Image 1: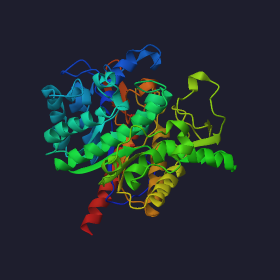
Image 2 (image 1 turned 30 degrees about the vertical axis):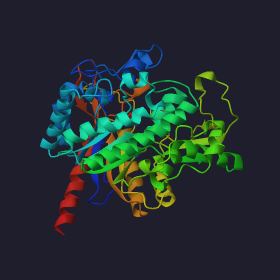
Image 3 (image 1 turned 90 degrees about the vertical axis):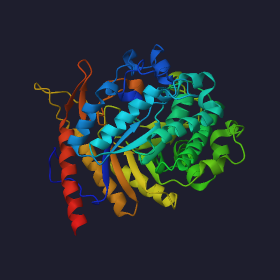
Length: 470
Ligand code: IFM
């Protein structure tokens, strides 16, 4: 492996756009300011034992006050795009009714600052921070929350639709539905069976309703961000292949099939068993969910190796309420990031090619997240020489290039993340940023990967100018 600033950087199509991404609860802080209401993540973080070291997004990177400094960093990087999310409880503190003027004013300022730096804002409407008041009424388990999401979408579209041209309805609904309601490792942190499936359906419905609102507001291009997994059987046995197929339904098909084929997965009875009663589905929902999109956001970090395993995990702390009889198997012989995730760039190519072949007619793809958490120990001068992150990014960009060569229509790529930030149940010690955040002083320190990405983008832009002039 080579270090930063090497000549080995992949050359990607000149028209490919580049950016970085963040999410409201992970960076904003200021949870009690500007009229913001509580979200399920505030509640989850305050529940003892849920988040490492009892940490929370209360202060996070203080982006709410320091967004000007952060946008200046984006300008220095030279990105085309910046993906951020709007906090629903900042806009509607109880998740319904009249909008909070201070909340909308914050996003007005943020969007204007991003545009003023010559960068295009890409807005995610929901990155997991459901207003707690809606959770108290049943949250994603109930259909009304989809209607509330449509109402919130219309408010944001009316306010920002004149300046934001790319809209992402939901980020990784797999995590909201299953990590939140079946595995219990994300807010609201429950282990439920059928309600988790209802949550999945209502998230899909919320997405579809939001698409309708964004179209009505002529807000621009509309998409969703999914996190399909590249799933690999541990052995060639029929049982392990069948386990992968069940997991593919849980992780990928639950979302891709309704949105892109207008049907629920045909093996859902086999996967969910008695849980698949479909009680929450209403005629016409599939039409709402399956409206055409302008782009598909994909988040990719690592592949998952699986084997067939007896139903009912013996370790109660690892048990999930949606048990599909599979077990994760560690990847041997590859580097792992501090998330414990294996680094296998070729699986990025394979995933994209598989999706492209498996779902003909997919809209153009934006890679809305890709990146790695690394130990990032600063040296005596405070600099972070994060060579492993540079290698990760370079190797994944090369893998992306191979997918593009194979015919996958990819239009953009975002590094997760601009800043070190609040990594959900892991708290602050999992650092994904191109910029180190000193959480005591809230100072920002660009890492070597920041400089590498800046140089890479400079070279890419030069190639683009040349291509435009040719
Ligand atoms: O930090 C998260 C982000 O919020 C959603 N996608 C995965 C990232 C890394 O775990």
